[in-house]
Image 1: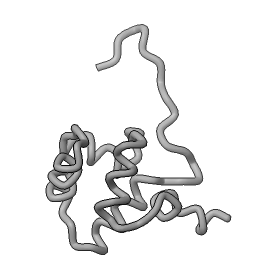
Image 2 (image 1 turned 180 degrees about the vertical axis):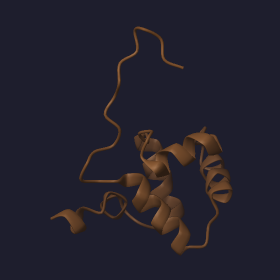
Image 3 (image 1 turned 90 degrees about the vertical axis):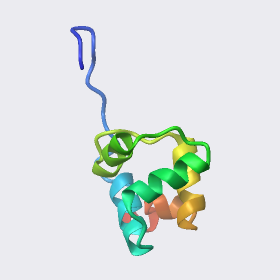
Image 4 (image 1 turned 90 degrees about the horizontal axis):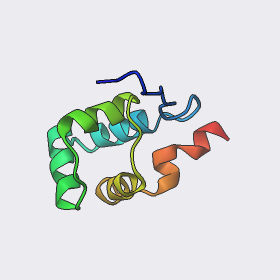
Length: 88
């Protein structure tokens, strides 16, 4: 909940929807969100299903450690997560 001192933050960026890319790759591997969260937790990422869902929706920014763990789980590299080839 925001208080009067809260500031709005820019979430992800307009030209790169990291969460959408992660969701697309997760679904292509037939991994449910709850299973993805469990795998992230096994990899040392302290995340709830709520936070994970917000990352996929683009309303919460992921940490670098989260992204690294996703690369490991989804068997890809950071370029794939950011989908740099699609925007170049």
